[in-house]
Length: 185
Length: 253
Image (cartoon, rainbow over all chains, first blue to last red):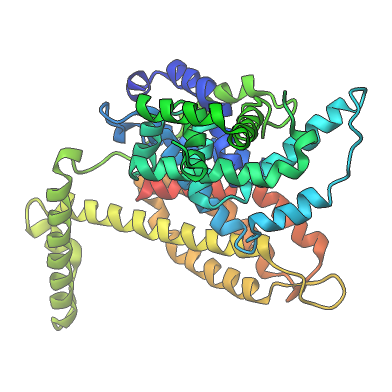
């Protein structure tokens, strides 16, 4: 990031290359439409560039980057989709119970089953309460440590731990009915 | 630890290897004795495995390798607005700016109240050093006015992409947006003088582009057809108007 601050566009590209998919997956927790998520991703990296002078060395870069991505996501989400307020329970009903029961075959349907597993899990993550979703995304997609997440979200470490616990157990409860579909073993 | 409830409170962090050695030892001891908690842990590990799927959320076939270069090219075209106050003097700069605004306001009131013809440039000439100050104030005003205008345009565009089908048939009620577009067109005419300022030159292109859209919208019927509305919405998306407005307003502020 120091090189980016001095105007090194090669370093800027390297930085995007390193973080683009991680940041995109964090953003996807807020946006169902891939085009929206992609716009927020681009917005985030352009903001990184335009605000490069405001980053300070003593601040963890990843925490700063994800904070910008989350703010951009929330901003876009609020403007775009105020009406979408489905609860976790709604997902159970609409996404899981109504999803087609695919036969437990290991043949050519495997790819479809994999896609279905992802779709169910993605929707479930999107319906988690905001703080739980943020902690979960930063942990699994941003690959951050818990203390780094606490700094990025400006909350106590205990809050991060309890939200991670709630998020994972909520997903587990939600997906338990889909055990066969979601077994990654 | 012989209490399942206490153990389960720690299972996620156990699976994450985020417990203290003492807590970890106690959970392990409990798991060795409790089949239900082992089953619970197995469920948690399944969720962790699912979350570790590298393809989760990623659109299939997206050309990620092209994104860094494309974004770098766009970022390179963004020229940060130079600060007229050094960043380490920002608090002082704000105070100075506020004081200057007050002085300017008092001066303007006096000028208005003074009888007879008043020629502001003559004042600028008569007081050495006023020129740069006035230019800075004009520049700041131009930036603020432009940013405000862009934000209002953005609000209108947001309403336009979210407009619902309220009319009979497949028409969409855009009467409020049409009225707003006409107001913004009038504002744009007043803003044209400010857009000549060098600090907002980059915004001029976008404002002109928005003006075309506003003209189009202002001539719409109150109940607009779905096709025409979608055409405008596609234009907004294609030209990335929201993103460009965000970037420009952040530059201007």
